[in-house]
Image (cartoon, helix red, strand yellow):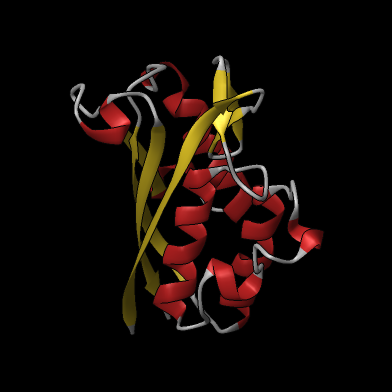
Length: 157
């Protein structure tokens, strides 16, 4: 059996926050504004895996209104969800992601981000790919107001 999962997340960018994508801190003057550490890429990946497995979504696992998740490490949250997915007998075929961000340029960090995600999921780096797009100076992404991410996974049982 195979299943596909789609994840999406979007956060405003704000000063005095770290920009974290896929568990990697990216040097920039702004970072994601979120209840946890704000790692939108890991949030989208978490949702894609939970959706494909039928286990729910990140909000049902870690409700943002609960104070215990304030500033939580998104890598730890993903690892917990992934362990639950694996307990159901699922294995990752592949993960394909998009980061929509005007600045900073993502390409110099891509390999490190792909490796970080592969390490969190304990899979081969060849199973993970992340590409970046800009907003072409349009919309919230293009004006530098936010970062949004999409993740699609293929699970196999």
